Image 1 (cartoon, rainbow, N blue to C red):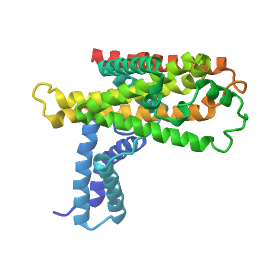
Image 2 (tube, rainbow, N blue to C red):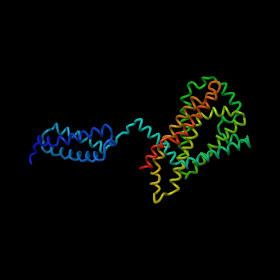
Image 3 (cartoon, one colour):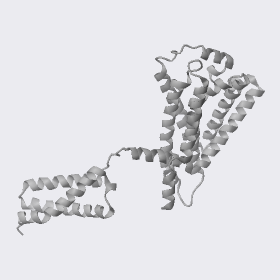
Image 4 (tube, helix red, strand yellow):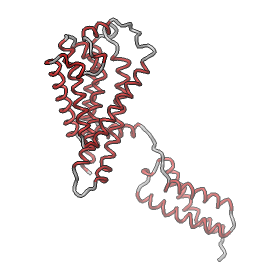
Length: 336
C-alpha cells in the first residue's frame, strides 16, 4: 500500500502537536503536574507516535519530519522511563523539615524512653560524684574536666578575647565530626537489639550529670549554664534522637507486626531512619558552630545572661519545632 505522505502528515499533525504540548508540561513542571487522564492520553499518543514514525520510515520520504518525530519520541521516552532529578524549592525544603518533626512524633515512645534513660544516667552520675569525689576520673574521662571547676572558670574568664582566632573553623569541624560519629554509632547500635544504644545514652547521661553536680558543688552553676546551654540545647536533643533511631531499629528486629518478614519490617522503617539521620546531622552541624563561635567565649567577653538567654530560646525553639511543626500535614493524612 502506497502511503500518501502529505495527507498522512496533515491527519496526524494534531496528535503530534498535542503530544508535544503535554511533553513540554512534563519537562517543565514534572510528572505531578499532569492529571491521571492526561497521563493516560500522553502514553497513548506516545505509542501512536512510534507507529507513525515506523510508517514514515517505510515510506522513505520526509526526512525532516522523521527527525522531528524521533526527537519527540526520544524526549518522551526519557520522561516515561528516566529518573528525574529532584527539583528543590522552598516548598520541598519546608515539607522535608516538617516530615522530620512528624517522624520524631510518630516514634515518641522511643524518644521518651531515651530521655528517661538519659535522666536516670544523669542522676546516677551526679549522685556518684557527690558521694565519692574521687570517682571523677572514672565518671568524666576528659582531661579538661578533671581539674577544679573554680580554676577552670578563672582560666576561662582571663583568656584573651581573641584566643580562638584562627582556630574556630578547625575546632568546629572537629566537634561536628566527633558528635556525628557518636550519634551515628548510637543509632546503628540498634542492631544489638537496642542494648548498645541504651548503654551509650545512659553513659552520656552519667557524664553530663557528673559535670553538672561538680560545677554546682563548686558554686559555678552560672558559668556551667552559660557554657553548656548554648550548644547543649541542640547537641543533647540530637544525641537523644540518635538513641530514638537505635530503638526504632531494635523494635523492628524484636517485634513482628502481623506476618511481616524481618526484611519487610526493616524496609518499613527505612524512610524514618533517613529523615532522622539527616535531621540529626543538621542539628549537630549547628551545635558545632555554636560551640566553637559562641560557647567558648565567657564573661567579660560575653555576659552569662546573654549566653543563657540564647540557650533557653534555642531549647524552646527545638521543643516547639518537634511538638508542633508539620501538624497540619498530619491532620490532612488522618482525613485521607
